[in-house]
Length: 350
Image 1 (tube, rainbow, N blue to C red):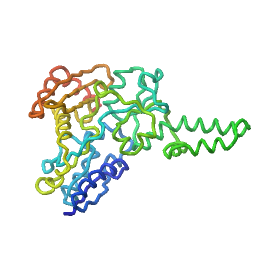
Image 2 (spheres, helix red, strand yellow):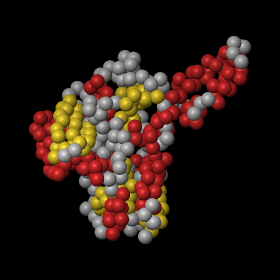
Image 3 (cartoon, rainbow, N blue to C red):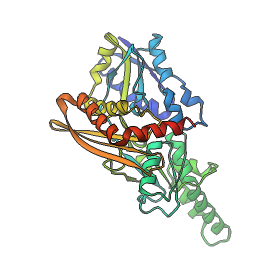
């Protein structure tokens, strides 16, 4: 059976799709990737949480499946709306990569190490709110672009300053020109690209998904501090890949790559997100981990400025995890989460 997989054309998306392709190809199937441009790829001057309200990174891929051009579509699960076409199912969920967020800095410092008023880049309302809840003094600034671009924007100012310093010392005869060459030769490729990048904003740090950096092959080329998922709670489905397909044979084919534990954990996370009606417009983090017969789950719902926060943990039964997750969400809503989501939606409509 030949399988055509719809995917976004970004480097990270193609790497994720390649994971699915390789898993299916090992089962003696011919698999081809079909690159599709989405609204999120075309509209580069809009904040991600506003684009996410309409499934901007997802819809175009699923339409290619519904049209019959592709058998399935590969998505970053955290980008997927909790509601999607009735004719499609999440047929396959491979084993998830790290779900955690990381603080990336030029020198590898922690959140506490950042100077007062430091500029931190993120395109996520959830990350913004959790940063401000911890450090209200921070200047949290939107940033878009693929993983490489964002890292280059972070590294550019310090690398360019160091290059200028060494060059001036060489011009003055204080250091040998060979030292400048040796410094440049020791740079990673992404650091060399950063030297050539023009930047409008000087970032002291970025908050990014660990899985994205790892899949992009950059985790070992940057300095980072892993943020504790128990307090800096990841997005529902973060680190996971979802493959959507029509029911029947296409879904059965894709289901061969399903990872049961990841399926349970992400079902819990997305059920809570859906029940709270948060979508991408409210700062909601949910992180679930299967531990024996239970799914240990932490959920955090915040005001967009981090001034209010509701955080709860609960151990849900594995054998009834979806219903238990819905009940957990209802309790969160009663404790004030519904009001915080409502406020976030009203702010997004302004």
